[in-house]
Image (cartoon, rainbow, N blue to C red):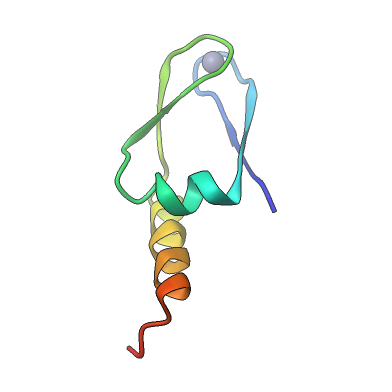
Length: 62
Ligand SMILES: [Zn+2]
């Protein structure tokens, strides 16, 4: 499933694929808009979700 982020600057929706979410969001602080190329801060709840997805992949026993 893809997640949607809306650009703070131009309002353009940006679909975020599951792979990007898992591999990138937990270390990144911003994503760039496809339309206006301005940085948008990644919301904390999406970073938390990204971390959870990574944990899920590795199958930790915590
Ligand atoms: Zn934009």
